[in-house]
Image 1 (cartoon, rainbow, N blue to C red):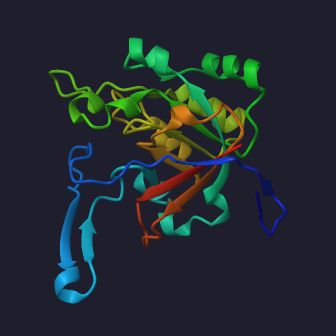
Image 2 (image 1 turned 60 degrees about the vertical axis):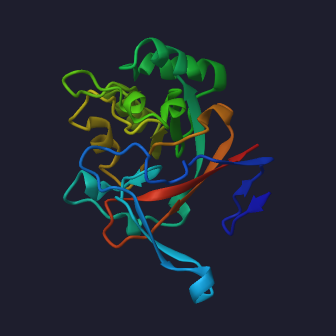
Length: 240
């Protein structure tokens, strides 16, 4: 159990990694810099082992910042510590996504979920379990590009995103694909909508199938990169 200074209490029985291991062969968005590691100190020669690493701000499991889509937006370094510990709910669309890889979450999906689990509380992050984490080790399957190079993976529709922001006052969204926008949407409409304010956008999550629909608290660890457009993220789920 954790009790914070403002008297919010978090009770949990398990802690689950929602971040992928970062390695050189992870799926990368076209144009993103490669993941690179270089040894700079050897235990046998220097008495300690040390590497340097290089990767893009939106590589592997990561959080996007408003300035990645809006010139007026803040960088990732401006997120308060309190904003990175948030309640989460999980909507499971993996069966629909298995049939239609372009499936986008609808308002009806949200309302059906709420009939079972109650209305989404203000201040929540909505996580979308699409089942795409199982494709992570195969870049071709993960992006699922057609012969024209268009990616096909599921995401949040603009209508559903508007509904969640305006009618449910959520503070963020997350997904197990490389984008909260469906793969075909090159306008990044959902990212842009959510990041009109310093909210949470998490991409390339994993282990969402291990979470309950309600009750999870996320602890989102970021690199506080000055003016960063985002950051690789260590996301922990505190599960009741």
